[in-house]
Structure formats: C-alpha cells, structure tokens
Length: 145
Image 1 (cartoon, rainbow, N blue to C red):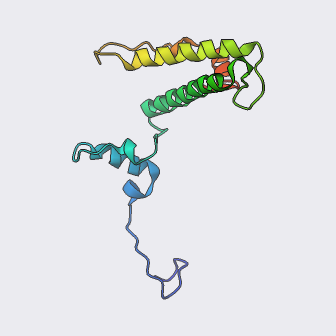
Image 2: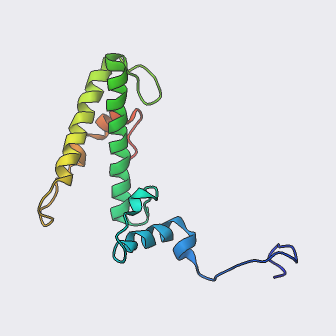
Image 3: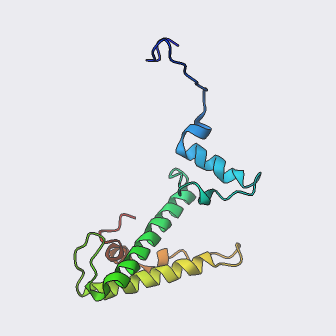
C-alpha cells in the first residue's frame, strides 16, 4: 500500500486491532488462557511477564522482584561469606550478616504465604515482615515500594 512508508514491491501483512498477539501484555494473557485448552505450561517457553496495570499482577511483580533480591543476597553469601558485598559489589562489612538474616526472614515468610492450603484463608500480608529500611539493605538501595 502506498503511504505506509513501504517500497512499491513490498508486501505488507496487516491485521487491524491485533494487540492480542502483537503486544507483550496481549500475548501473555492469551498464553495464560491457553492452559484451559491445551496441557501447556507457558512458563516453560515464555519469560515471566506482568501486566503492571493490573493491581494483582503489579503485586506479583513486586513480590517476584524482592524474592530475586533475596536469592541474590543468599547466593552472594554462599559465594563470599561475611566478605560479601551488596548488589553493586560494595562491601557490606558488619551489615553482611544482618542482610543475610533479613533475606532468610523474607524468604521464609514468602514460602509460608505460598503454602496457604485454604485459599479462603487470608495470607499474611505484612510484606514479609520487613520494613522499607530493611528491604533497602536486602535490595542494596532504598526500597521504592
């Protein structure tokens, strides 16, 4: 078509209103719904994705972000022991042990929340029991949420 910025000999395939497969959010939603039609686990072939306009998915993203930080603190401790640095490699010194303790507390609280057997029971929503300042130590920078 002329006016689309294409060469005359170029063929363009265009479908109007196709955001269900051409946007990351649309594709994620459709892949999540695939489990109702096929025995497919999208997590095996598609990266973690979140619709940050959805409050529940935003909270899932924040929880995932924090748990990755927890895993990183524990991995750095296993690798370097008390000599470990923060996420930017700056030595933590006396704060290393406290950072590991907080990471363990947050990880244990997350596992407890994930193990709620009765979905009608309210999970403990105390943000893993850590204050924003404590999360700042685990994250290696001030906690934005």
